[in-house]
Image 1 (cartoon, one colour):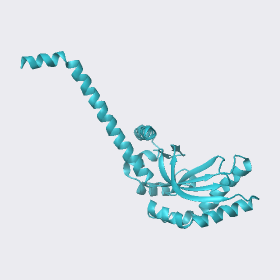
Image 2 (cartoon, one colour; image 1 turned 90 degrees about the horizontal axis):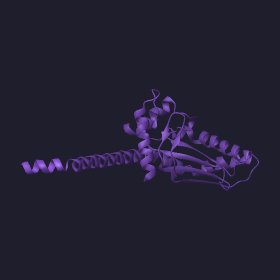
Image 3 (spheres, one colour; image 1 turned 120 degrees about the vertical axis):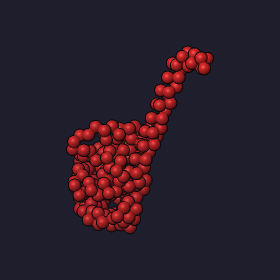
Image 4 (cartoon, helix red, strand yellow; image 1 turned 180 degrees about the vertical axis):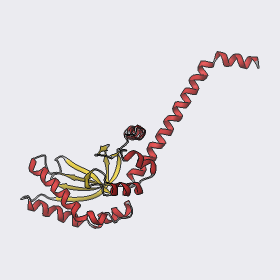
Length: 214
């Protein structure tokens, strides 16, 4: 027994370091598991909306925003009725030609003849901050409207739940829809609290960092 005590005394520094190391490893694994769970829930629950302008000229950028508005006006009221992301994805796929027609009409009305392509595909998005929401980086299902060469600055938002319909701020009705779409822990970090709670903000930074590393 004395020998065991003496060994423990001599090696207490090594034992302490081992405990600290094991704790740090466990903390990293727990944080990574949390980040992966939240990121997957968010990316698998929403559809993003991405409009790429032909160029960075003032005229082309104006057309980009007009196409954004005309597309949202054409399908906005109906996508609200979708029950989940899968239903929204099916609705958008079935209405790709309608979206293309709306975009082409807007381009023609603005004196141009650019080609338009409409895609529903997986697309990587960096972290995005809106007025009172924030979305972590990740691979999202995305409705992409590409105007002409698609080389200009782009515009993006969240098509489903329909956060784009009221600009980039989540109104009360949209907030409830987003809350019903996401898990509680995902909703906590996506929607910024008016009380400026630092804990969800810290959690979001953890998710953002680990998602970027991944």
